[in-house]
Picture 1 (spheres, one colour):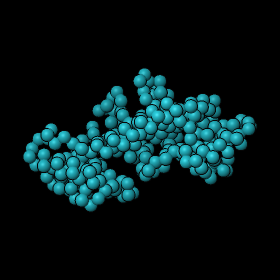
Picture 2 (cartoon, rainbow, N blue to C red):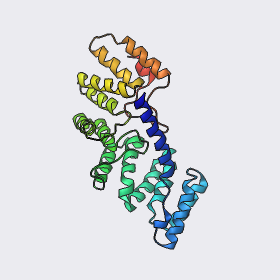
Picture 3 (cartoon, one colour):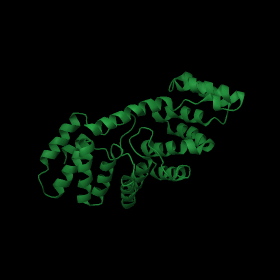
Picture 4 (tube, rainbow, N blue to C red):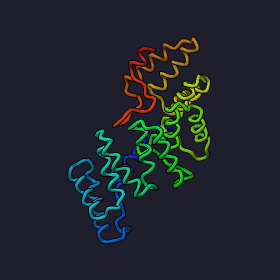
Length: 265
């Protein structure tokens, strides 16, 4: 319960963070035109997704063409609406102007929204030049960006490399686990046929935060080992029906499992 409360608190803090990250301290901006642009940008950020917001970002860019945040925030609605071509033009411009600020975000989006795993790895490797000690977390807070890189390697079939990244991260002093770290590590071990290591991580996941997908994979291990798996299968179905699954507002989690898959086990 205590660990779940910790995750819940992190989620609440993330909401506050994502609602305030767009705001810029205009007093730190040089040049009158760019100061005015900054004020317009802050106003537009409060209305993200509305026409008035996009028009505000346009005026920001007209006044201060190098204001990278305006391109980034203007790109967001296109990403959420699935217009990835327009999003890419805008986010690429933001990254060109300020890679230190926007590369990590672009890498995360390439992974989560586009399934561009090679592109995600490339961005996150480049991002490390600016943050060699700690890449930070994905914008939604679910994963450390090193875990995002590991999942990208896993998706490209480089399972051993993916395992090594997550194992090293989990062994790092002071590392704060993401909500699904042990699950993703467990699935990668499972795909390698290393069922002892897979089950070890699924059990660790259960103790920290359990959900239908994790229970489903535990039942798969039991079935492979010719053990009674039906109780776990039924628990996975019940947990799924209770809504305790991997969720994302705009996309689907990597290694997400659906009810039909559980039924067919």
